[in-house]
Image (cartoon, rainbow, N blue to C red; front, side):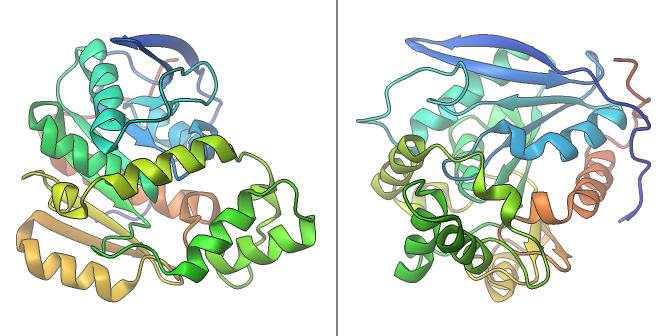
Length: 283
């Protein structure tokens, strides 16, 4: 894979809109070529679309149409947070892709977002060209209790910064990477709702991501998403899965190594649509 696509040289305009999905309203951050192939970015547990700012700008600068649906409860996104499961979160993303009406999308899910991406590929294969699983806890068992507690502590605004930084360093950031930027950006009520929805959904349901091609971006220092799990996943699904290991990163890989993540996504997207060039965005 080409490791070094050109990053954009200037800021790419972000437009905001709201898409309806029955009684749900989903805010969408959109960037890039309005006629470009669609890449959808789904954030981690309890976090919003802004986590992908750096990655989204690079993808849009490479000529793609980049959509970032805000999860329910973040920004202008509104909808029930109880009595739902991953099918509901996947349905929200499906509504966004269908509203764009520009073909099946390359759907990128970071951490918790990878389960939503896989569920979407399972429920609506017509809307998914491929999925990227970024820092994916691909195992069929729940996360280890120590990791789940560290994630809760990272988002707990009642704890001191010192306690939260310790939790962030353990759960999300590789040695030598500064976790302080992630003291902000947490939505504890959303985190709790998403965790319940994930626990209510059997991991067997979304495990295979339907029949979609899969790019698996694996951090090399992740206490939750392990390199051996990526290897086992590829052994299960063979040629459907392409693994790229992102060095010097952990569970917050999109914040730690946005250039490497962007390079891998752009290279893979070019392979998905090989007969089309992706001109630089004019936005």
